[in-house]
Length: 89
Image (spheres, rainbow, N blue to C red):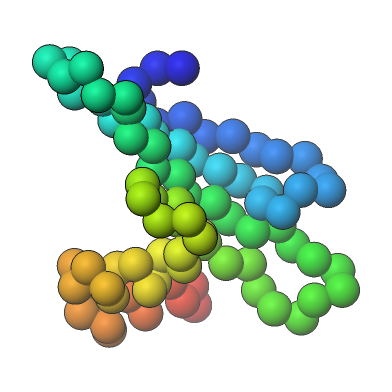
């Protein structure tokens, strides 16, 4: 798999996520294994009334984290900006 390139995949049902974007970051001068960052869009469910969620997988964290919570935890942008990005209206 290529390093430092974003790869986007469409998953066919019945999978948990319908879209996935992955990037593997590798330093050219280091012998360390590449780090993988993945963002996934959950698949639509006919039995659920909830909307789709966007979750991220980051190195050294076992669980998928919603992107809004990740942005807030990293204090990258203010809460109002996160709402404007996440709520499509």
